[in-house]
Amino acid sequence: MRPGLSLDLIQEKLANLPFRVSDDVIELYSWADGSDSAFELLPGGYFISLDEALVDCSMMQEMKDKLLKIFFEPYYDSLRFLSDWSDGGYAFGRIDSPSDGQIVKRCIHEQWAIAYRDLPALLSTAIARRL
Image 1 (cartoon, rainbow, N blue to C red):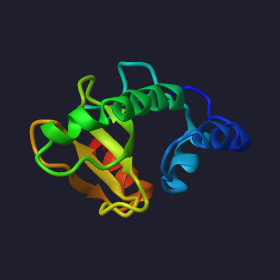
Image 2: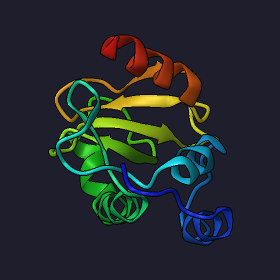
Image 3: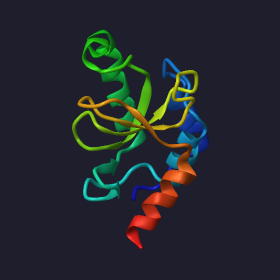
């Protein structure tokens, strides 16, 4: 795991997002700023740094019109923090979207689904899988 970031730095980086995400993002990245590529927090979910998450989000924003034609349901803004190294993984949903800021499972091949109500629920699952 990489060392966590300061609260001020996280807030500064998130300030440029075109949407708001839950405060769980701040909690997560103050704890750790991702991990090396060998660490799966959940199966198929590699914990990426905040900078990587923001680059991914920026690319998705640039492709938003195309994505609206690809996904099975309307495209909802999100900030992916667990990546499967394609477009899948887990993301913090936009707080003013149908996901209501919860953690969604993202995949271009199936409908997005709410996977966890919040970060503690996701971490409880991740810890239980490792025991």
